[in-house]
Length: 630
Ligand SMILES: *[C@@H]1O[C@H](CO)[C@@H](O)[C@H](O)[C@H]1NC(C)=O
Ligand SMILES: *[C@@H]1O[C@H](CO)[C@@H](O)[C@H](O)[C@H]1NC(C)=O
Ligand SMILES: *[C@@H]1O[C@H](CO)[C@@H](O)[C@H](O)[C@H]1NC(C)=O
Ligand SMILES: *[C@@H]1O[C@H](CO)[C@@H](O)[C@H](O)[C@H]1NC(C)=O
Image (cartoon, rainbow, N blue to C red):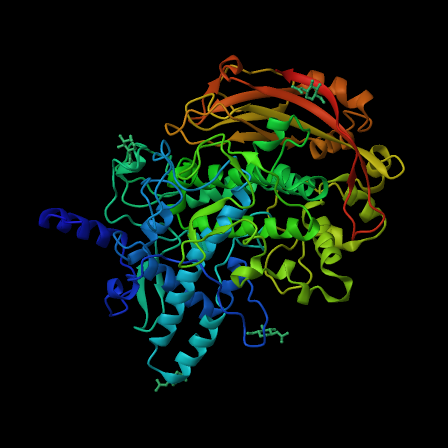
């Protein structure tokens, strides 16, 4: 692209104001531009002893100074590659959504040229992102190894080359509280500039985890005002949106996501113990299309991180989200949760399903299955694309995670060791944990990870996780009968594009039905977020989500408002107290009559508490109990 001189000068000034990337003293352009026709997604090399390298939690990676330096330097280099290069950050992020341009020569199907390649509300959602992340990872790997070779001091170079040899892309585990004294969103995301060591010594550079700087921003392609005029990606820019360039408020993002932690943990616990088929687990359009009673999904949980990780910044808008460096780190975390679920359900795999949304290579309604090409990711120069069958296991790409690595599981076995962790991590606000605590399973008192040294998750953090352990035995005997208790869930479904853009159904336990005012109602128990692509497709696809109520109800048992968790006590209580409110993307209350296809109801399920902590709770059949809206 030709940029006129004066415009170039303006760009240069604004790039300087936002900070520079690391200066490697070489022409980054010449290093990255590829000559071959097709960019392939391949397999990264395993260690010389045959072991498959781990993707690390971001704080764990930071504890290794050499890997950390290489990761930051590689991102800095990646982001400074010209936007005209197919392997630039810009074009790789652009695969997901805007600028809706073909990548790697893969053309859109007719009628789909106003979408990205990403597949949402689709059976391909969980696995499509696997070769996508592998593409980003193989580029970071290549750059990190190149950077390691640039150190002139032999001793140093060898150390960095060893660190680069098994480097993998990290994840941020947003499903657990931060270690004591640390922020929930790790502080490595917070600072616009950092001081970074590298082959050219120490330099003050712009932080490649803080934002991506467009060079230039393509206003027309970026659709949403005012985001399309901002020079860089932002999180929580909402304080004064009229500013030419409002700052990112990472503190707000951190607090918002911490506020969702308890809900996320409860929802994950239910997904891991009660969702056994891949389609229900994997996407938010299957269950409602089949009239199933499994309303939640890993995709619906994933939406929370987009909405609250963006707070109306880039992460919040599906087609813009991948430009924010947080996107890939969030999706690696998703990939790990999916790999964990696969360990628990090794035989579960996808059934054919009609796409719920149009994407670049499939129109809404087209049936997709495990052989559908995961475009635009080629596995071979002959033009074969990855498909879900090929991408089913992470080791095919040359990576794994500590929690799903059988070589670390010890003689207990991988499945058992993973279930024990899931009980500890996500079961803490469930009646199941009351029973285990009563039996003296000390593991349940905190969120320690047990098999790998990991700085995440010890007690004493500012976690919102409800801990009922103080009431202990009396609460257990009131809520648990024998080895059974009742789980209570609010189920929501709605037409995805009922309103102009994303919206949310908030649930409260409250006497006063302030349903029509803007004030924040107290006693919120959860939210179902309807995350969608405004202005892009007109889709009447229904999607669903769920909010667990059991932990809140246990609190009501503890405070004496209800005697137990049985329907005879809970139904009248919910009839009196349970309220919902629909809010649009700007936070304004919307009349539920305007939300096509809206359903809000409550079901309960009898759950059997496992005898040992290497098993998960067993769920019975759900019973519909209350209909708030249909
Ligand atoms: C294999 O080597 C890697 C380092 O590359 C090391 O972390 C791992 O523990 C080794 N595994 C075995 C089984 O020796
Ligand atoms: C998409 O296709 C339509 C009609 O074929 C065309 O008018 C439009 O310019 C295309 N948009 C993009 C972004 O290619
Ligand atoms: C090379 O790096 C090592 C390790 O950092 C250091 O101990 C040594 O002094 C360096 N050598 C030179 C010549 O700078
Ligand atoms: C969906 O399932 C519910 C409960 O099982 C049933 O009452 C209802 O009739 C079903 N609706 C359709 C359209 O099958």
